[in-house]
Length: 181
Image 1 (cartoon, one colour):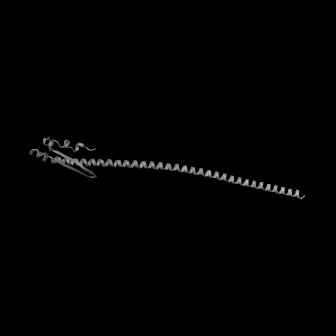
Image 2 (cartoon, rainbow, N blue to C red; image 1 turned 30 degrees about the horizontal axis):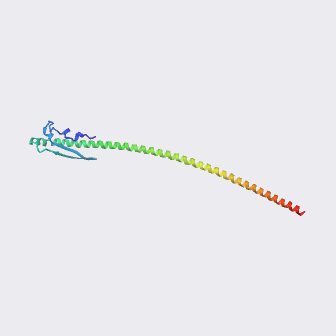
Image 3 (tube, rainbow, N blue to C red; image 1 turned 90 degrees about the vertical axis):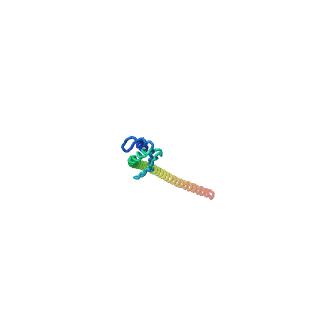
């Protein structure tokens, strides 16, 4: 988290000189400092000060003395910004590692589920294929039986035809023998 008071004049600069004693003119100075951007190891600060023109010369000398304080504050702010950046980097790296672990875990779970589903579908396909084979064998058996039955019926029909042909021939012979006599 960013220390909001770190970048305000009230928290550090107001009414304080180099020796640490309270000085009135600092309440009339506006010291504005903020971070423009933080990126990797480079931190850029933009600072300016607004000094009212109504300050007395003694006030201005106190302000001049405060340049060391401002430099100290600037260094502190830069150090704090670098520290915050490093903390951010550590936290970001930690979260990235956690995300990688989580993603790896989720990928493994997904692969495991996919393998189980593939095995289940393979089992279903094998079962369906075996049912189809069994039904095909049953149909083949029924077809063979039907074919054998039809052949048997054809034989019987042939016997019946032969029987009736023989009867017809016998009847013709009998009729011829009756008419001839």
